[in-house]
Image (tube, rainbow, N blue to C red; front, side, top):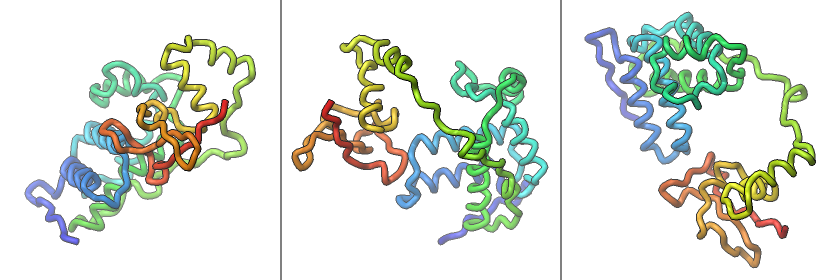
Length: 231
């Protein structure tokens, strides 16, 4: 594999330069198996860190900077990304508006930030002449005990209320029903097209794929037929 030459006039490759090259490689590497949704999330993480850190040379980022960024991020409200205009806010404004409430990001979400930033540094160590340490290595937060967390089942009354909330002629009426009887992810259901309903070996199925321009799947294993329940 060819080695990327780091610009040295201003202390080496900047964080933004490294992030741009890394994302470009992911987009063009057929073995990366990364979805567009994951790329967008990774770009957002990089943009937040760049704004927070001031876009230093990659080699200038130390563990204290990494730790302080993650501490700031941890204080964000879990729903900040769904607020209008939030994704375009400067980092300081984002923290001011959404970083001082009672709700905080889960450790699982923080670890996604750690993974994205650590992967970038590992890529730079592997493919460039960057010789710094990975400041995000070892920064992951503790995972919750799966015995004490998990999904709470809907009650029968809640299910009845959910399924009666939309008339049958409304497309949204069918989403929870398909989810209930198929086990498919909501994102997979949203993107189904009429030609994704087909018969396979005599069984009617939904086809989950990324064949359409606006269709995406989470992993390679997500490409599959899903039998349609008889009810």
